[in-house]
Image 1: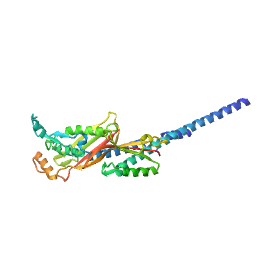
Image 2: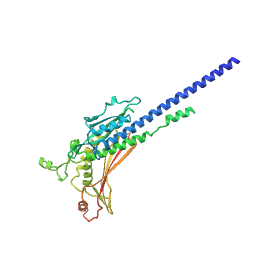
Image 3: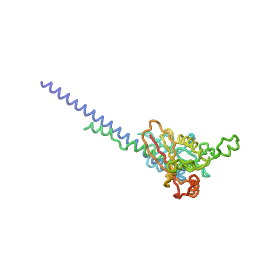
Image 4: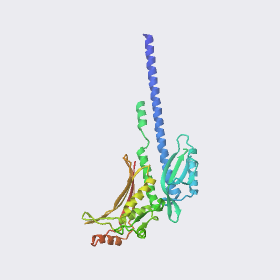
Length: 144
Length: 205
């Protein structure tokens, strides 16, 4: 009777420890999913903020159109680099021709924990004499 | 307790994904409307249409060419506003009257042209509906208004993500517009100053 009681206790202890380990693993996995999702949203939010800033302020020529000068973009990239944010900006025509490319290639954007996030917005690029060309502004952000 | 915590964490989301997609869609729609204000029809091969001045089909090429109106230099939103101006709909006591000018032909051709442009700009990312309407002018027994829409929805499009609007004034003097409406109605009118037209872009997922 004594031996049987010890066996039962041991089994009960192992069962409790096993369940506890299982629950802790589930909790850790849930937390990982939670942080991945939060990081994805934060990167998307940040990329959208940066893309809007580039369109409306950094490259802005007149409301709704941008100018393809890289000086301001260069300075903006340096400011972001101080916050460990790497940036790539491309302006493409609707036919796919790249009119402006600035920053490291997207596959070189440092992303130790998550891949770079990208946003594209339609823009009109000033061509002089009052005309503008409809293009797409693509912004990649990584390395946070 | 740990199970509940896990379930809570899996279910919990720091930001609602709908808010994020709505924010992107709103930014995309604003950018699209601004881009349409700055880009000319020339970008997309130009836009021209045949003036509806003759009630018969002329076989003389010179006549056909002279009735063509080429608007390749106009911004896309200018075309939309002109379309609204030339195709204002007049209703007297509920009965629709003839359009104001010979540019009736602009309506259908502009729809096709605009659909091409919007498909290139937006197509694939979102479903869209572009609505152009004038703020209705109610003069008692007469109602003057315009409304048109271009859309490209998937059958599965369920949720309106955003709706962005720009407002413009019709490029015509109050006197000229009053004169045109009076010509159709054959009576004198007092119009409000400046008829506004709204261009609304809705994006759907």
